[in-house]
Length: 307
Image (tube, rainbow, N blue to C red; front, side, top):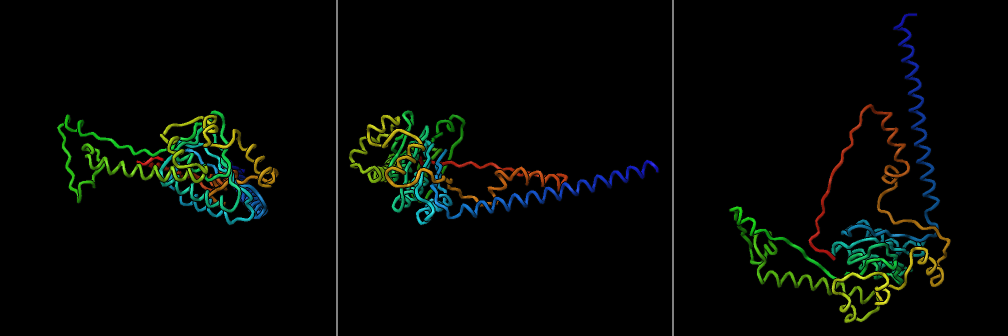
């Protein structure tokens, strides 16, 4: 038998083996998907606690607020735990999430558990809870609103560059990066900040059952430790999620043995592709294709209003 014939036979044997392994990979993925779907179907409708994790900067997330709002009418959800570790975010984002949590609180128990940081909008989303838990060293509070801008007219002048703005009114370009704030512009922007500040104070006063005047005394923008916040009435207890679950069991009759499921906004398919089944899909893709292309992108979000 010639060398070329041997190579051809070896090539055919390798192709058969590759076909077998590819078929096995496809079968393994299908089995895994069926098992995962069966698991989700078993979980659907069973009693549980929902956990909403609020971390990082808080933005205006429509899908998240809708998912939280729907918890109120989900009979399988017996209580909501809001786990917070956030420095704050946009006023609108905090307001939307606050209102969604407050809606849930009208129909079932809600507790908030603060991590290392729950300040500004991070505190705002905690106040609808019936009980707020914090760590001794949690940084919370920072009740206030900030609007920041910059102005580079001095730099432009030193470079010999001038900027002109044609506007329909004297406040259309306020604030501006290319010229200082006018007195009228400053007064208008200060009015915006005070109005949003009043809304924030109102949320805290309602959620914490405090007099608005007392809230204003505490709402000068400063942060408090969890221990300080407890003395001031901004939180109810020192502890974590375990303590929150014990409180739910003792005061609201929500069994401490119930499982906890995280509030998610992604579909099962996307979770499968990015989660525990992701590696199988990745290997299958590599085995079926000799070359793959991964597209990545970047996104920058800038919030002028912080709350």
